[in-house]
Image 1 (cartoon, rainbow, N blue to C red):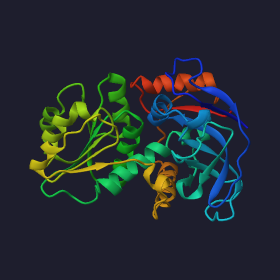
Image 2 (image 1 turned 45 degrees about the vertical axis):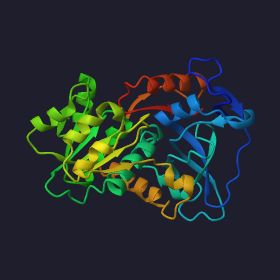
Image 3 (image 1 turned 135 degrees about the vertical axis):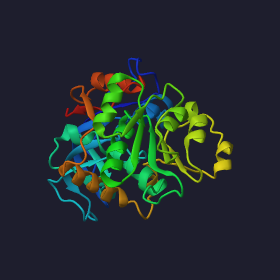
Length: 337
């Protein structure tokens, strides 16, 4: 089968940063689905792995952690899907990725694709939806009020892939007021369209802008990017006994200033459940089905912002460059081979 991957970690501008690879079609065993990949999207994790992780012994590494496609074969233990089902998922960082004609994925981390979306629109959702949903409900537990705090959540980086879906999930499934950050006119408009009640500028002091809204200190803050740049504002803005979550990788994170307010700090990695095979891994199957149902009910929209062509070296390099720019709104998608 055709695939795109790499053998040596390099800048995306290097000629061989991504290369064409031929691999045998894998066999489905255990709980695995063999999926014919119809569309993929590119996430910051693709960029981080390609730029920082060299595969052992020159073996090719296939990137890609968002896929939508059709089940072509199932392992003997599969109970949730059948051949012919349309699925979407974010896979496991420990396995070969979705930038290939066929991919294996454990059924317990795959969901039924939304019926109302084509493959390109659907593939923009899995990784970011899992990240946002787990952050909101498993880490921050936003349904449990913080005593005395405003029933509000501040989402830093509201226009990115995770922020774009987090805003919608909060609006669809909670009564929280959404404060989202965006710094450019087009990204401000984007987060307003997605349902943010208030939009503030993260290129300016955040805490003062939150206070100026007059709604009180938010009980929850979700930082999706550049956390270290905003840490002092986060400490100032959050309510006492509030809950703070982050998903990026600051080189250093001084959590001591949070002690005075007894703030709890939560790190989210959507790969944790599949990476460790946790007993509740099937929760990702369930939450993806929830997202699909919300889409089909018209309560959530795709966060697809740009399609750059078929899955090949040139188009994947373009997509990686776009993600590396740090100026993406929503998601970039590629369709078919």
